[in-house]
Image 1 (cartoon, one colour):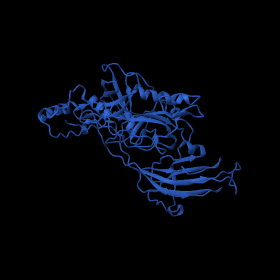
Image 2 (tube, rainbow, N blue to C red):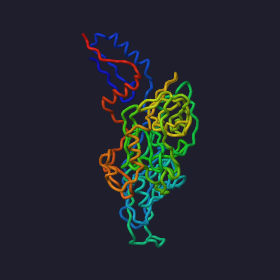
Image 3 (tube, rainbow, N blue to C red):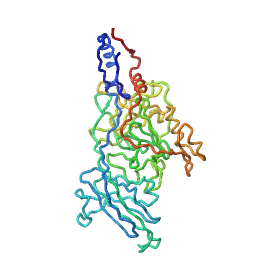
Image 4 (cartoon, rainbow, N blue to C red):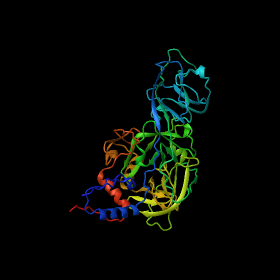
Length: 450
């Protein structure tokens, strides 16, 4: 017998090592047929972020007075603080501000560096700290000052012996080294143009978008969000202002990553830690619609944060043909690159979102890119679960395992999903089914040696 090792949804990387085959010529002929009829660049379009969570240990101790520190890493494009062990009294707050220096040292004093705060400021009280999952916003620079403003007891000043707070920074996230990858331009040139759609944002190495006031969608292979994950509603390469960064409610997220047509993720976002508003209140959201029944007369728009030679990972858009319609996925030919994974697949004639872009498949000679249908049954079920209101636990646990109805009348999981940005291998049966989708009618079989 021969065995073909099949990766999830990516025949271009299939290992076709054959041994001891008496029908070698026939098999080689078959494989040549498969290779010539299969896209050579069917890749998940995720840009792997290069980021590091550095351990740190600033601790003000329990105090009724102010405390302040500045942290930085020279040359990092962004910085975020882990404040999950900070404890704030009812009227206390912490104030974070981006600083202008590029040569600050982590162990340097404020006076030695004469730091001047500029550009970005975030204030967090106890409620805001909870809404941000215990992390600060992501600041577009390499150093941040954080200050504890104590509870004044409502008297307008610091009271000795007043309510105590504790400022603790237990980690610093830095990095995000992004590079151009997985380019799947359909033809000889990149036809994408700059875009200004408020309803979607950059999330890690991918694109995410809103379908209600607080529900967002992305590609499953983009990974399970962590407490520090932020979706940035911005048009440019820069991080979004702190007022347009939103943390994921990790206890509501669910996703799958099993190849073409079986790749989706969805969850809720928390209110902005600075404004208290839900993202959809500010940004609006996409309306979901039915998948067209035919390709003729129908085009697709893909908008997202793909890499590019100019303004890489800024928001860009392109419209192309709807190429083919399948039971779990769609094919289309707007240009995409790494970072476009998760982009909404929008039916241009109606403006409705009909899918989630997940995989490339184009090259300079043509081809088509691919995405998961929005009406896939398990995805549609989870979206309904995220949007519903509830009064009892039983309304949340049906088909969703261990879940409950919270005090706000929304469903959430008892167990928080494990954060991951690494694609999860899919079962061999699903790999085979994914490969068969790519074959589109090519016949193959197993051959026994004589």
